[in-house]
Length: 224
Image (cartoon, rainbow, N blue to C red):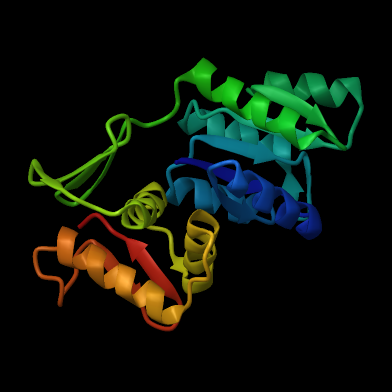
């Protein structure tokens, strides 16, 4: 699963776009502004950044420049501005593509995939503790021994490892599993899958060191 950071202060647009891209097989993390966007980028692992130029607490050009200082992750600007100067400035700070609003969702998906192919940015290995996901082979190992996961368990583990160090709320996890399975996922079902994952990846499932509970909020994968 490819993880995308969406930095967009239009909440309605962000919600609709997140839903569409999730349906296309992407995992979406949304930030409303410059501060949140840079903080999330610093904590997570992202394959691509979708970025509005005009943000409520800053400028997308600044966000792009700071991202490119530390990473070669593709950055695609989404903006209503048709100003040629703004476009040029976006490319000068390292943007990989520039899409004007309104845009066609299918075109956006094609642009994202093209940027990912161009940069070869999809990680082939995701690692947390002594557990490794080999994405190209769909293989999960612990201490170099294969772990057998169901499709939903694998999807859930991919979410955690793709967002290592980032808190994932129970609601977001349930929405993701519901989207993937096509069936309603409630609290009890999520609890079952979290327990199954811990039984398979943790040395001591009763005292997890990889998949941590943040009481009352959700879970996060940590690399101790």
